[in-house]
Image (cartoon, rainbow, N blue to C red; front, top):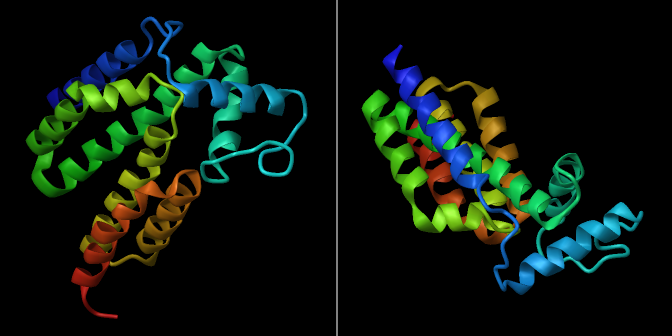
Length: 188
């Protein structure tokens, strides 16, 4: 019961940290580009076909529904990125729980919640934290495959890593822990 309370408290703190002052000027050109891209999608244009898109092919399609749901502004894009960044926190908790139990899960997640870099990237209209969520979950799924040997976990690890790479290929580094966990399973 205490583990659930701690996990929920960290998640609530993370949500609050991502929802404060989302309308401020950051001076980041990429945020302006992302805003224009989503505005063009709202007008019916499609990424890559009609709109220049320098990130992976899934980024804009993943941001777009939350962009609309949160009001269609720069703050809405930032809130969408912040929402996706919570997936990374959940994945970190799951990895920590798998490898080191509740204390490891709480410690690892607390470090990420308090990380200035992760928070800053969670509050800007950038691709990195959107892509990190599925990459972190891919590592967790690979660890679950290593422990349980179920093909479902292996498929999930591959699919999540693929989604992450299609958001932003910078997450290719996650292939190393995923591959190691799978290789260390042994057997087939």
